Image (tube, rainbow, N blue to C red; front, side, top):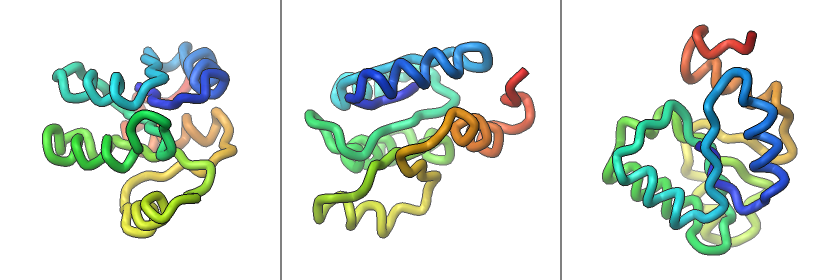
Length: 122
């Protein structure tokens, strides 16, 4: 699942990775969190830190509390931690982080490292 309010980035990830992965795109942090907490199964979560409706750190906290098994496959994407809250979160965050801009190859490599060799692109 990709949770990002940037439509172009989300669609690029969805189209670029569709040969290797089934990619679900949510442009709303709240809707993404609802789906994550509903019990839907996701192998990997790419979540933007700066979302207008729900901060990525809040999504991460909720997943940590409700679905901790996803944390090892929860990736935070950021174009720069510009608020005090975002900086504090990034400074303490110990999970996988993708700094924008990144390439599809960066995402594929990260997915492979988190999911194992079966996630290798064809």
